[in-house]
Length: 191
Image (cartoon, rainbow, N blue to C red):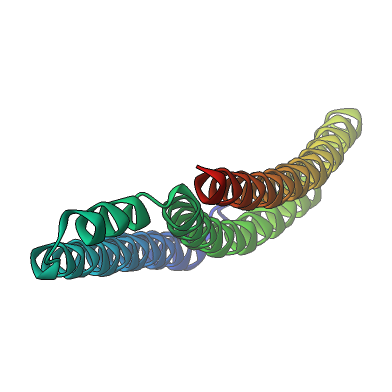
């Protein structure tokens, strides 16, 4: 009797290939969505610029021209558009990473189960007196599983902390930008 089941080995190889294809597909979907977001943003920005040029060309006197030109330099609106773009990019990357992590997690669970089954087969077929070695192997396998679970929990917590930090920073930056815009608007009115 062989310790290795060639049918299981073949199905494992097929499952690994399928996983690689799924991960590749997720990466390509993410890149495609990012490209679409970039083109959409570029198109909107280009349209805004042409609208601004049209308005400037329609100005008939220097005062109207100066007022239009001043209205185009709105740091608040530009900063908000940039923050929205960055938020969308972050969500896209985060979502893609999360989907890939779920795929990998399922594959790791399957692999761990297969290793456990192999250890059981080894334990059944071990010669007399090899019980201590089999016990050490089982203990090492359990320890590795515990370490993996701890690392996985720590990684999830770190990702949540980073996500909360980014959200808080974006909120604070948005508030600061709005306040700066209000202050700039007030000082323009006084001038």
